[in-house]
Length: 246
Image 1 (tube, rainbow, N blue to C red):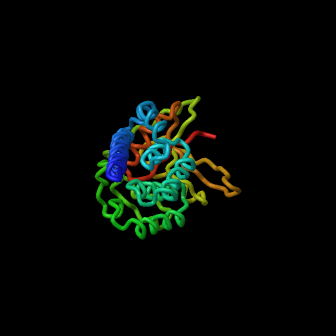
Image 2: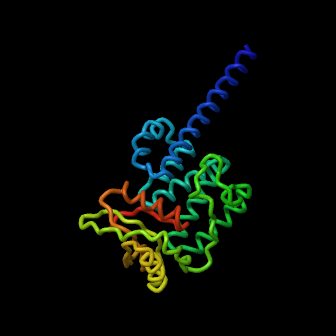
Image 3: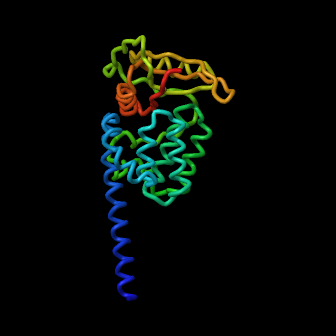
């Protein structure tokens, strides 16, 4: 009887391990599709996975990548860090929170997240400059070290993009920065102006603090906005977040 119990326990462990691996593999494929600009497709095809494994760290990370609200995405990443700090997705989650805080102009918070990544996950591929094996896409290769609120030097004229036609009924845009001063926001705006993008600075108040948000493009659907955000990340290594106009 003792041997039988041991066999059953071992079998359950093997089955659970195999299931976990299959979930990870499916998440990896979905992340790769997102990196290729297929977020809308992933939303549809990942529904069953999210329903069957809602608390799997890989699924939580996938939900974060699909979230249209950056704040909601950070909550999902933090859930991974709080409950699954030793999972393969923990460093992905921490690096993504670093990217978010850097993108919205909270540079001190971003620096703390980057320091946490170096301390808790020193072997993370995000620190070595190599793309993680599970997500072999170039969008995650560069790990910038934020210092000042100055935009990078504009690329050469050869890669200029034509200005995006404004859409009167647009609901979505791409946020490429959030600054506490108008001067820094205008610098970021000039960067995209010089590239030929349709860009604006929006003055908003969050948690009682005035922020100057730099928005690029106008879109009727989140899917179209995601495509431009991916393009900006790939070409200029600037974190771009899809947001709803408000």
